[in-house]
Image (cartoon, rainbow, N blue to C red):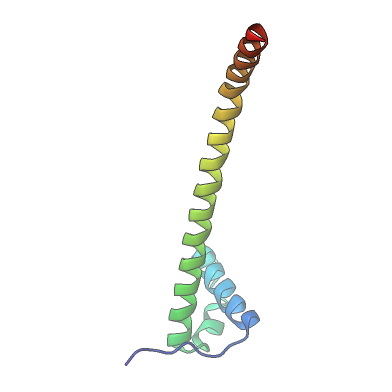
Length: 95
């Protein structure tokens, strides 16, 4: 039987994800929020991990696309002006 996503408000999902993230980053030094997480049902914690993972991946994909576009724009801007000037000079010479 597939688990259904609980009907939680967005702030609740964000809070659970933030606590999980904090514990992932600081569990070796600060374990005080682990008790809070144990109060959250296991299936909700699991689904929150999935949401967080999906958001990180989507953000990574978006970042990769932005980086690719920035590099393309940079190279186009770097090489195109000379090409454009040469084309303009050639056009003026033939006019």
